[in-house]
Length: 122
Image 1 (tube, helix red, strand yellow):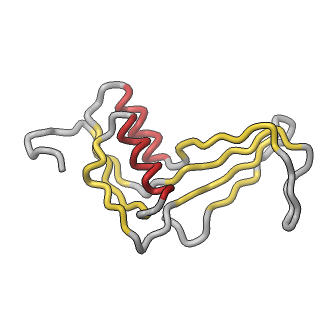
Image 2: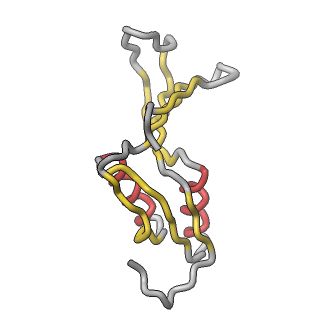
Image 3: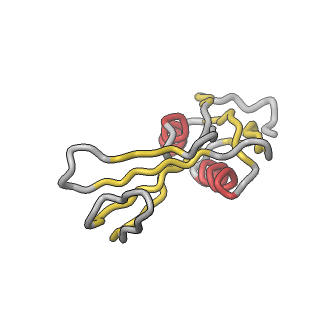
């Protein structure tokens, strides 16, 4: 836990999740089928985490208060924020919680992307 003497410019509170972005596929995925994609990336998918990381890059003292699952995705989210310079000492990793994971399938030629979120997650 951070020492009591540290003052934060910003305290962000929000559930964390990452989003998986699929790009460059030749057909939209349908239930029960497989579709190849040219690229796949993982990005911060929560406005609170995106803002916290951005403000930390601008040298603000940022603390994140949240709950994450005690699973690989939760650990990945916490480590990413820490790497960005955000104080994560107030993030609780709870084994009874499933960490959030979202996804988007996008094509440059489509007006809208298709999105989804992992059911029963933060």
